[in-house]
Length: 110
Image 1 (tube, rainbow, N blue to C red):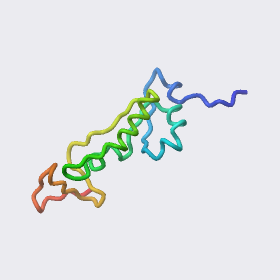
Image 2: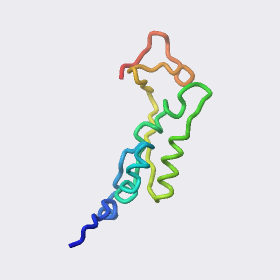
Image 3: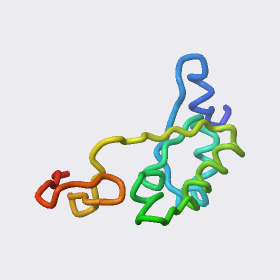
Image 4: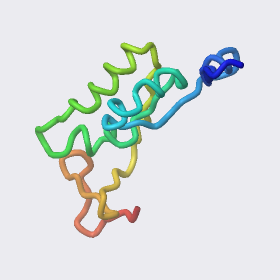
């Protein structure tokens, strides 16, 4: 009896892509599993606006580059959601003035 588990994305190759939400920490510990079973990945948080452009004049692409490099090397599609609208911050509100100038009394709850 075979003990090899078939690839999930290969089983559905003619139907749709099989995706996973990942972060760079998973690449080391789960990279082999991800490469075998998924043919599409989405960054959990590391490609969100506030992670890539945390402050005016500073960009941090290192984590996003790591995810994309892994995906390209494995032949995996990369999907991310560009959220144009209210940029939410960890505390539930956002006031990223260099991106979206808001009046002092205009805050949007998470």
